[in-house]
Image (cartoon, rainbow, N blue to C red):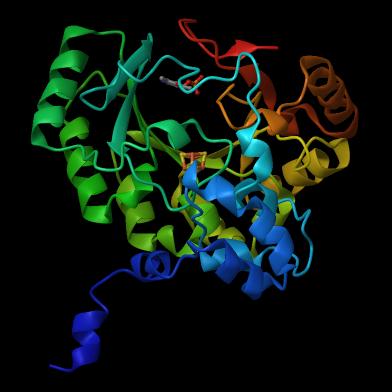
Amino acid sequence: MSKLKIISVRPQWQQELAQSFTDPQQLARFLNLPQQWVAQHEAARRLFPLRVTRHFASLMEPGNTGDPLLLQVLPHANEFIEREGFITDPLAEQNTGKNGVLHKYKSRVLVILRGGCAINCRYCFRRHFPYADHHFGQAELAQLLTLIEQDPNINEVILSGGDPLMATDQHVAQLLTKLEQVPQLKRIRIHSRLPVVLPSRLTESLAQRLASSRLQAILVLHINHPNEISPQLTQALLFWAQAGITLLNQSVLLAGVNDDAKVLTELSEMLFSARVLPYYLHQLDRVAGASHFAVSDAVARALLQQLQANLPGFLVPKLVREVAGEPSKTPL
Ligand SMILES: *Cc1c(COP(=O)(O)O)cnc(C)c1O
Ligand code: SF4
């Protein structure tokens, strides 16, 4: 057997993941950014490390220190700003999901399939508890199945993280096989940003496995800016859509990134071109170190009005915030 065959056993997306940037100066060189400028901000690395795939970096504009994709991942001195109300655990979840299961909403149960992630977004609440080692194993699965059995209201399982698509196709398929045997379940939902930073993660085999399931499958992407939708991503999404997977998107409203009606309008248009419907536009979780991304509710509402004027209703996302203890996301 040739060596090549043995090497190719590792999926392409995992190979790409291993080549991610973790050093700000290395990213600066790749993008031709002023090294001094990057050095000025580099200290914020110790608050939360830099992590970005080469694919995502390739979508940034060289030389542009204000690039909307760069701002989402590059450590920045503003992260040292302490602002009232911005705390380490804004959703009060640090103690809820010890076994990797979060059951806050009546009909849906959320499973932390994998704690890890392929990118470190500066505004993420994971920055304060990266639960990197978390792995959803047999014990967690047994607990999940018991929870569902005891509560007939649950009809949907949401795979989340971290990023659930950090799990292998086999791991997802194994879980799916178990869930398919629970008659009360109707849907399986995957919340993931991985396809955006690694389009190769959208394997055809996973799409086919999900499409052939008794459970209706939904993929909720996390895309914040039209520049994140590369031709490779669009191509992969079209395959998933054709296979029969429902595609939705959620965005986070971020100052300096997408707090602009023109940008959000274009995002909705581009999503629909890739067969994705806008679902949620989230107000930022008030996490310590991310206050410079916050957009006021007044500005958020004004943006939504502009979107309503610019777009058909089905391309206007719901503007929501997550409030700890509420029975659903809260519309603004
Ligand atoms: C957001 C969220 C869900 C899903 O909510 P939908 O409104 O159905 O998209 C489920 N569980 C938890 C814990 C959540 O934070
Ligand atoms: S992809 Fe999602 S979970 Fe991962 S760092 Fe970004 S916001 Fe957080």
